[in-house]
Image 1 (cartoon, rainbow, N blue to C red):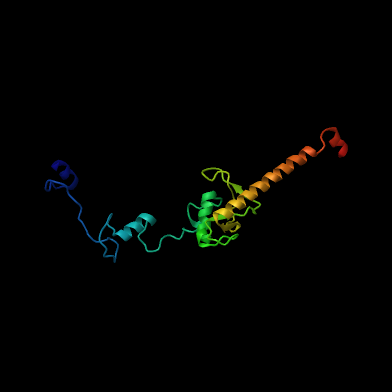
Image 2 (cartoon, helix red, strand yellow):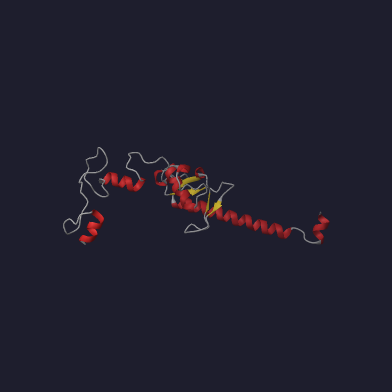
Length: 177
């Protein structure tokens, strides 16, 4: 042990563990907070862990496309988090149909570029990237809206099937043209 200590430090010193000098005060200039970890007080340590710096103002990339993890085409859940952040929680609004406290943001199915969720618990759900195509609704009105939309889509699909069967085929189609 002494051999290694002489090799490293040039002095055999006393036996036992050599600790670095302990400073009970935060190492940020002007801060008199009690040392917690890595030489910082609790506030500066948390700021350093979260933002990578002990400066008072965090980096300005937290909003929208300036954030390094921003996706221009978010999935269903990310979009709903975006709606909550931009327009507030649905619970802070009234249901647009019945007037009771809203519980969810409901997509109104009016976007011509609607998307369909491909994974997770929301697989198959239709959504829009436009946050203004969502309305605050209670559970009851939201389920009625979605049920009515599904029934309308099924009726439209049946109409297309019936029309394609009614069109003339083969020789009759050439004579009709």
